[in-house]
Image (cartoon, rainbow, N blue to C red; front, side):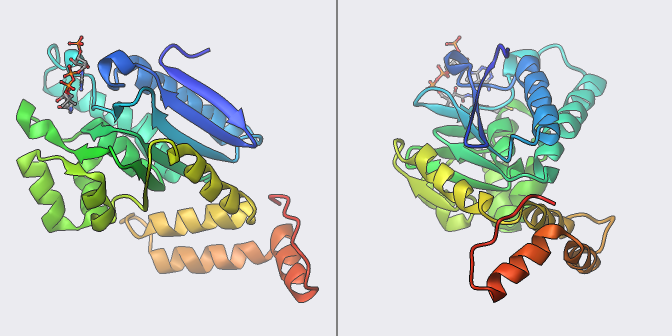
Length: 259
Ligand code: COA
């Protein structure tokens, strides 16, 4: 169904593998277009309850935007490329009401680091490397990297990475808080799935509420505390909150229905 992605749905977790290993899974127009289609499905298909993004092959998660597509771009084309990618893929990942996790299995450079950072959180294999090497090309990140790297690791560390183009290893990414867990290559997907299974046992609308409220911290158009107050209130009208509260009081396990 897809040319550049492998997609498999198991136990409501959609694993999306970017599959251009010969180009270290670089994000060309096809990958961006197909990721957009995947997220159309993620948003609309109730069977999909969580997403894992990873890269094919042992070497790379995503080694950036496809540089071979940059040669023909001018200012207008560059802006359009960045806007299209951010709106159709990166922002939709960040705003997705279902958890989206990056399992970073190797190089996460440029657009690859940005793709991982658009996810709600990240795990990495010990061989992962993160970097924003755009200044080597005379460019800056265009898929949200200047914003999300600064949010995730703080301005000083982010600016050093952006200006130097230096890569950091998985241990440093862990120390910086860029990734939550570092595993062996073999354990990366199983560990990611175990964490998602825990999340999928919770009330889905409450999970979505946590994502929306946490995102509000970084959204100038809304007040995060007001967003939290509104969502906290709205959730009391859900069947799942009634069930969760009753189950606690009756000392039984809650059965949530995403309602
Ligand atoms: N865009 C297009 N092609 C890319 C790519 C990218 N971002 N990253 C890697 N590739 C291609 C290489 O051109 C090469 O293709 P070829 O075999 O047809 O020549 C193939 O992937 C393998 O990469 P190679 O450079 O041979 O691997 P390496 O192990 O020597 O180096 C990297 C790995 C990641 C250090 C190196 O590929 C690199 O610096 N990539 C670009 C990273 C970057 O600047 N990303 C930000 C883009 S905005």
